[in-house]
Image 1: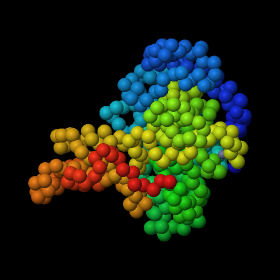
Image 2: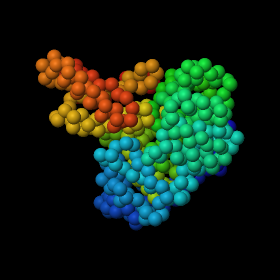
Image 3: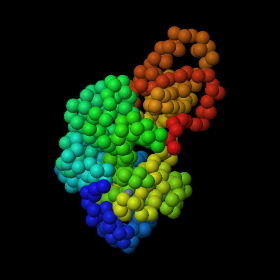
Image 4: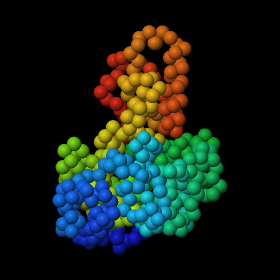
Length: 430
Ligand SMILES: [Zn+2]
């Protein structure tokens, strides 16, 4: 098992804390000087950057939420002038409350370093051929992987989200040895190999790095056994680079957080008090190396716990437990983050009133399916088939177009579901 930057990845706790303190101090100075939002917040709690004496002092500062980021859209959270920004990306597909993030040249370099560590941890080397089956677009995902893989010297195939048949053909012809995708795509490829009657042993594929949506251990076993490979989890958020925040080593016992770039905290999502290691709560991250878009105590909305115990791999950076759930109602399906309010707005535009609805996520044929249940209170409506079909067709078309993949819509009578629950996730993730 390899290390990309052994000195950093294996430094002792005292050294990690020293690096964190120095990087945090520099970050606080930078945001206080350059980001009005933070300057205002710091003054409100009477905290000056020089008041930071130890890493723990960060708890005196308020949190940053996605709402703060969209309120400061497009450039007010940037800590450098735009002429120093070499890349712009957006978080998720939500154009109602958009979030734009920026990278300086050094940020791109840091991102590459993080991905290079992730890849090397699972034995990817310059001899590998890396097929990136993530959509190249406005979101960050595949771009970071590309930079990191090229930094290692591996050969990158930016396959993006082409159909499974094309992916398999390239995988076979180009001798792909590493797949980077969502677990849903990896499962789709596994099924396509069976359909095309291709023996996985005849391929060069040996490993898959999967992320950007929750996936169960059962899914991992399915992917590993049907493709004859190993598969590891990776975690990141567009607001904090994208992929490259934390990743599994071959021990598969949690995801190592790059603690020289991020300061992790776990808080109770309701009371916001800090939770001890091992307790599950919301992951809060401070980016301590970012130049263009540093965030202080950013609430990720992801539920996990943190473990500082030594890992057999030798890495000293702490590990977060695999993430299966969000603490708000936001769900991730097929790599897309969906907030129920987005769907509510879409439906209300169509039906002309506030909808009573529920989002149900189910597993069908090992793939995730979103079912939108919409309550129709007018009982005579159900007798008029034509009217029903027109409405159903429109809802189906517009919601599917919005998300970029097919959903199922069902019209139901009042009382069919518990309308206080906007999201019911029936996936067996744990
Ligand atoms: Zn490890």
